[in-house]
Amino acid sequence: MILFFIGLVAGIISGMGIGGGTILIPALVIFANPDQHIAQSVNLIFFIPTAVIALIVHIRNKRIDFSVAIPITIFGLLGAYIGSRLAIRLPGALLKKYFGFFLLTLGTYEMFRRDKAKLKKKEPEASVEQRE
Image (tube, rainbow, N blue to C red; front, side):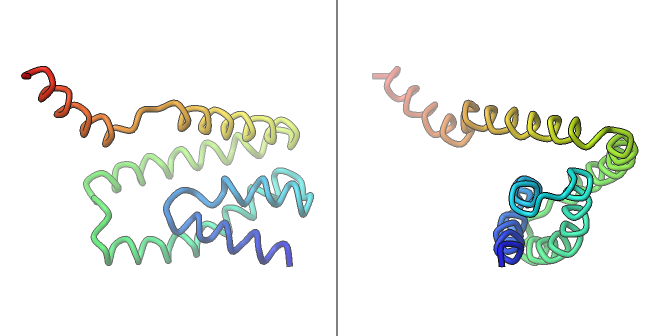
């Protein structure tokens, strides 16, 4: 039952474009206790069908800029090949630490970054105040 719940939550997060692996990998390691390499491999298998469904939905809603997506995809494939070769060579404990550091760094960045949309809304107000 716990694997069903983990898959459901990770699928919802993945469909939103956030990245289900940020939920799936730690949840698998904590609750199912596989080796880090296995958890990350399961994430890759999980990613393919969920990404296809999310991609179809986002294409139908015209939410994809293909001029940006195509170069990112090409270089992402190259990076995925290099990263998978590197991950195979790393011990599971070290891979787990790198993944944890990555999540911590990303979370910290997200907490402290300034939202550009909020800044744009505040800029015109500041210029109106400066005119008065």
